[in-house]
Image 1 (cartoon, helix red, strand yellow):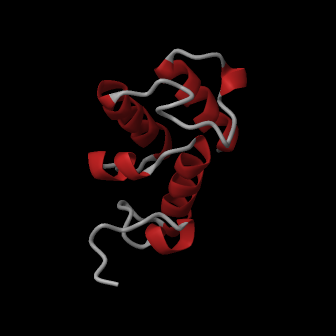
Image 2 (cartoon, rainbow, N blue to C red):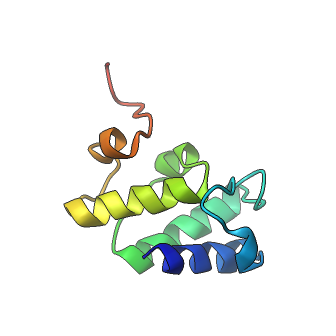
Amino acid sequence: MTESIQVLIAQNLGVDESRVTEGARLREDLGMDEISSVELAMALDELTGTETTEEDMEELTTVQDIIQYHRCIVSDNKTSVGFCCIICNIPNPDSKF
């Protein structure tokens, strides 16, 4: 799944695949903006069979974040970030803790 996601990110953001490393920052290093964020979320959803919200995309800052997020959702058969926040260490804005 990792390689498929990296290829998808490169295609959607119009960058060379060699730039899409796990540590690459989506906005600063790869040039993702609001529009490409929505387009990438839709493409990722189609690839993984998940649902990525705009709010979730705002929290995902690196390629590794996206990989972990989707790996977690797919492996746990989840369709939102709630539970995956704990496993992937992504801040959950709905959490009261």
